[in-house]
Length: 42
Image 1 (tube, rainbow, N blue to C red):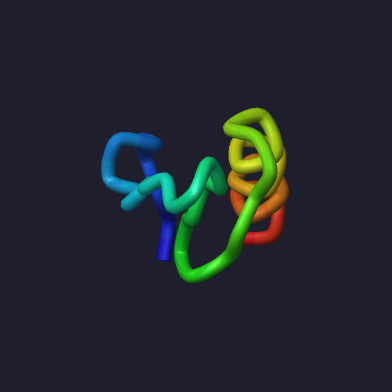
Image 2: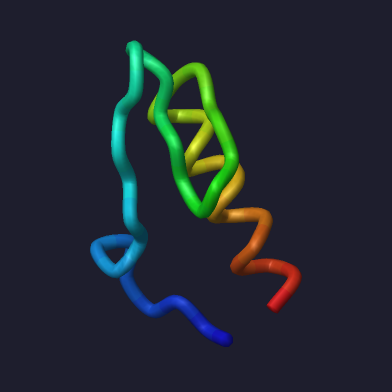
């Protein structure tokens, strides 16, 4: 599954922790790093 835009990603914040695709990230930058890695793999 290719993700064309990051707007389709569900990104929520719980207790100051970003949650994306069921994974927890300390910062929004970490989320973007993770998404870039996913884009490379797919």
